[in-house]
Image (cartoon, rainbow, N blue to C red; front, side):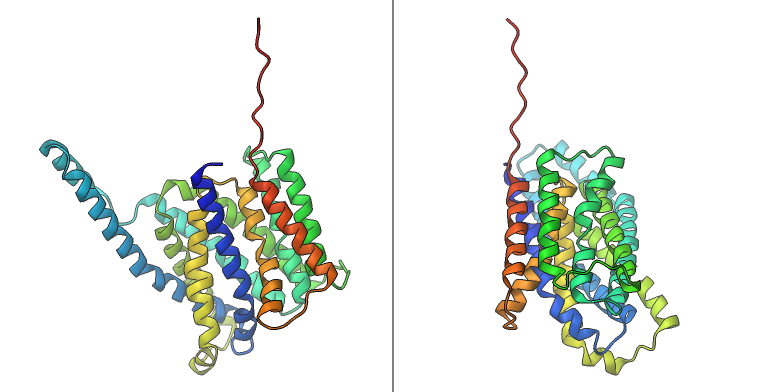
Length: 321
């Protein structure tokens, strides 16, 4: 396996870990503010957090470029300086990619927040994680074929998620379930959009743009449909800060960077580990015991992730004599 794939897999696993542990913060925050208000606050904070990160990363890149330019000829230095001076602060592709990601993220996040209010957490977790199945199906329409091993991993993941989340054993699709199902489809779109744009620009810049787009759109809807108050936001400041800084600013950026040059189906398999992490976090932090059924679900999920990372043997043709 290439070093880049190992690194990106680790970044996506870290993303899933942050999302899983942020579940408690999101649940507590909803006790004080309404869905669009929560999404608005966490998204704006996520975007603001990334501004100094972008500045710092670009300063590092400038120093690296100067070090490289110092060893080149004078003509090459002038050419490089001219090219750097002509480069826009944010490219057209980064604007388009960030806006498209922001639209998908805004729709998916708010459908999830509203849907959780009408259904159980177990059903919401299972239905949302159906992007594990939806992503490879969508990939077929974009000629991104998944190997037979990946489809086995998808089946193991679905079985694991069922055992982990569907503890009530019911699959009736109520109003809240339908909203979360739409959310799963939208998160699948979000993953596919990232897969398309992440190799074409700066992932951190596009992540920053997507959060401001998501926050602004959620804020507009918030003003017309909810009753936001500064007091309620302050009461939920810790959950909002945790979700904004870590779950939004850090995790979604790691998702964009980690998905670069990764198979979107494999990426979705790793990301859906957030359901496993949330269950384990509840067990370790909140003292919620895992049942045998839930533990088996965790085992199946981890098995699917490990299998998805195994390199496939290359087909060799029969040599002619």
